[in-house]
Length: 225
Image (tube, rainbow, N blue to C red; front, top):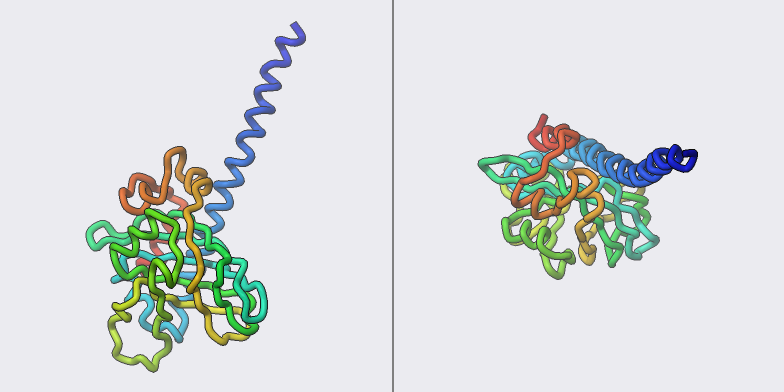
């Protein structure tokens, strides 16, 4: 009889142990979304990026990296995590998918401690490449630094020759940020934690089968709200 009474307690303990990692994944994913929203607001309001808001609205998607960390003087970076959203003219923004930014040879140059980065995805082909395979910036997709500052005056369109345009705000000495050599790979566990079983980058970004109200603030930020 005593053994029978213990079974429910054992099941409860086992269930709580399984639920803890899942909840941690949800919290990590939501934290990335919230930090991405803050990065979007910050870059949109920067006087050095006067046309970024307009170009985001004409892009095919964005990748937001809220904390891209350096490894050392003129060396590669440790990398970071990104949220990627797709945009189409009829349906607007998708929910965000989660990606890891690999260390590779990311060039956070001379004295930069960390950076907040928005990558504009310029074409449907570039977006599909990011969704369907692990990609390396500069090899699989071309990357250019987005024009910055009021000096570009009447410019209304970005460099259409690049697959990705990179915009960054840095903390520390700014002497340039390059993402060439960085590897972007889907974070399967975070996607499933945030949206449920079966969630993939393709399902989130291209098929739009998954949503989460926790991302509404980030979408409003990209819309200029």
